[in-house]
Length: 305
Image 1 (cartoon, rainbow, N blue to C red):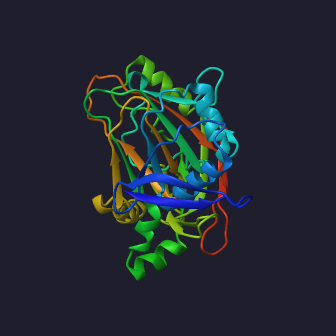
Image 2 (image 1 turned 90 degrees about the vertical axis):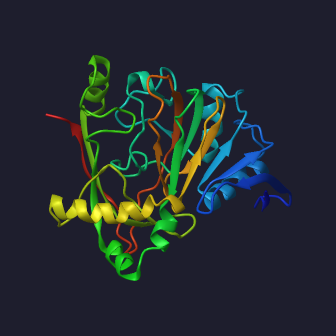
């Protein structure tokens, strides 16, 4: 167990978090805190600092959070954003991932990178958790970049990639869809959204260099599909090495918060027909900037023909 002490810039008060790192690369569990939209500024400053350091934070026993308080807490990080193509849960800005309706996030991704300014922070709440399985794994994209050989770093610094919403982790794969899941996929792809991002972005708060990859990448700019796929696999394999990950075993009422600018994640699809429901709120992000100072570009955002 370790203690993170943070001094709020507007006061002389310090807050000590009861914080336990869970893996060498990223991830920490925080105990003894009740999440809410009315969290004291000093406590929130401590959480925010810990998030930048550990990339993903976990909290047990947050059953008191309903949809409204979930959103109120997430709003402390900034303006909330709806999913760009899938309707939010009625009357909210919450994306509900329901395994009975395609919500199995079983592919490595950073959330919604087909958007120009994709979310910076996500807050995920466990609502219905299967008795066995359904864990989520996160990977540290800053550490992955740091550990690249110098030659691969130099290459990565130059590359830009096209990200597009051919499918989303909130939808299941195209094959073998029942009518309801097929309809979900059709809703998700009703608009064609794509952006061009640097493979390496400079984190706007920490200054770290992080890899922007995951399953929304379609190709690297200037390269064909085959060459793009080979390069993608090289960089993606560095991100998802087991030594670069942390795994969380969900219980109902758990909350996970992650820095979407410095992580990827995947939900393990190993719970068969058991029911799994999680609800996610995302916070508006910044337009990524590469190591050369060049910003990302929106390529398309329009209804599909």
